[in-house]
Length: 79
Image 1 (cartoon, rainbow, N blue to C red):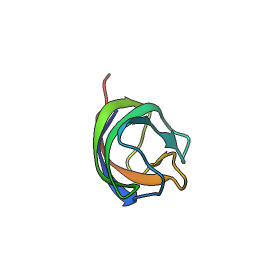
Image 2 (image 1 turned 90 degrees about the vertical axis):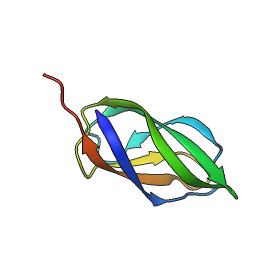
Image 3 (image 1 turned 135 degrees about the vertical axis):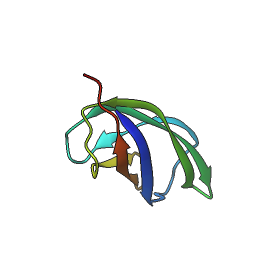
């Protein structure tokens, strides 16, 4: 479950709201981010749903004209 992410790129053509992500490393699924947008690029984000199966260092993308990208910084595990 993703707990925190760091924005790597703002992307272009972005819209604010809760967005699905794709995992460029194909480890996890189900993570959504709530984004704020300034001038078409992501300017802030929070994890809305942490999903499952992610690893620290995975790169997540949110679709736009060019994707916004985020690195997974912390995850939590449930047994």
